[in-house]
Image (cartoon, rainbow, N blue to C red; front, side, top):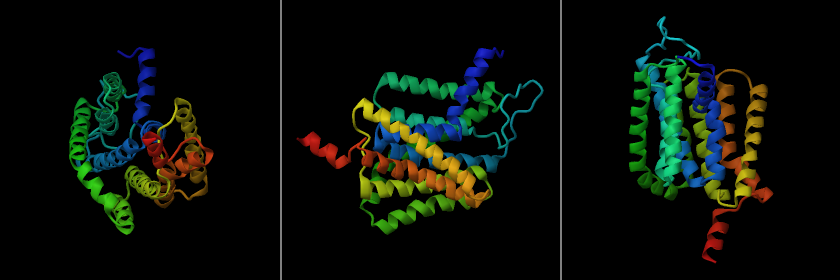
Length: 281
């Protein structure tokens, strides 16, 4: 049963779980909702998607191709576990943990379920791929919720050289497990950029996502800066893994440091120190 209106809707909703969806939606959380949530969600999502890529390579189950399956989205990676299911439950599930509003949580739940269903409907995944993706997302979420408060406090107190070393070495170590994967190269390089941008932000900017609705909405215009950087680097840098690594490292750092720096210069936001002093006053 494939009515045109439902097919069009699910082809659109499945894009939320694509790379472009993360590039558009991660900054929305980081710049316009809560910068601390954005930092945690960025690191957690990169780690979960790295795990997903390695599991796909290890299990190597082919995509649906039976005659009874109508394949409307052609994918070239392995099928299990679903990256869309794992990634979206990771990012939006953790946001639901942080955002203690039931209307928001219901909307996030419907988004996660809709994206997962779209993968089966479009012939991109078997149902067990979705269940596998959700399982590993929940494991990642549970582990992160348990460890993050303990680890974050120690990392913030660690010297700069150790913070930078971990920010680079952990994604690089995961990347070396499958260096020929374009997907893992994209994730690892963006993860390094996000990590370094977060360190620079905390130490130099202390960007705050607080502010009026107008200022929050204005900040999202920064997405055009990110897109311009991505497109320009794709044209300027050589094709291949090295160019991809440099490109997405810079894009990740632009989201967590360069664009927030621009917001502060434009007066579209304040630092956390400014916000704290106003609250105390």
